[in-house]
Image (cartoon, rainbow, N blue to C red):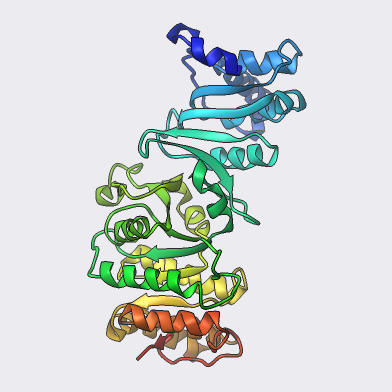
Length: 377
């Protein structure tokens, strides 16, 4: 579509297609596989336009308006030389005809490729009532949909994350707000790659209720970017109904289907994780943050554990002690000095200030703590 066509756009200008994707036979029947894929591509409403661009019948630049994000099977056409040169943007209303608000793994791969090839992708999101653009995270192979006025902050932000139960919010709202306010103030007192006067902050959660809702709400109240990696927990018969309820405080987001739960978790890429009380999901996230630091995927930044020492000992210590005694974490025991149990925001801010000012004994040269974490007094 050309810019001059917007003013005269009518309902009957749209192309409607009832697409049916047949079950593909797989790599052992390559000829039939290729035929079915080709048939499906021809069914796409965008096919006539993309084909006309490829064949040279359309030579002017324009944008693609579509109800659903294009099928990943059209990647070959979208990234062809002629289409790439003429297609200046893709605008859609819904991520998927089958998955609703949730992108598939192949969808996210296509989003990333479109961005690399210089084709911007926009989501006219009904939930946030905003136009969001897909923006890759710097030096990462993932991204988020971001309001246009927040793109620069997103690209340069330090990412703080909240892990915790979707079932309980706890009494952390006041302390969390004080902690984030303290970090905003601390920016003017330190000069660190992750925290400095000009460094934006972003809060990332799972986008659900409970502790996640608290994190996003407080972020919005303080003018911090409020982000979420949201997963479809109802795709297995609605077994986890409560967690499916998205909280209303999310402005930047990426969505995932349940079969990519692990990939979704890996794409949080948090600089400063914060743990609240939580269940099995939180246990998984805790272990993931341990492994990130052990393997060097991320530097040894401090992880805050909000709650009593007794609570975190019951969660962490027996596992750490067993691994320590059996020698299965030999050489990695130092990871225990990356986790800090705090009772309030002031204790957490002391940890952060020591870290950002270069005085926190963290990482391989640091001490080993028998509980598996540091207890802040």
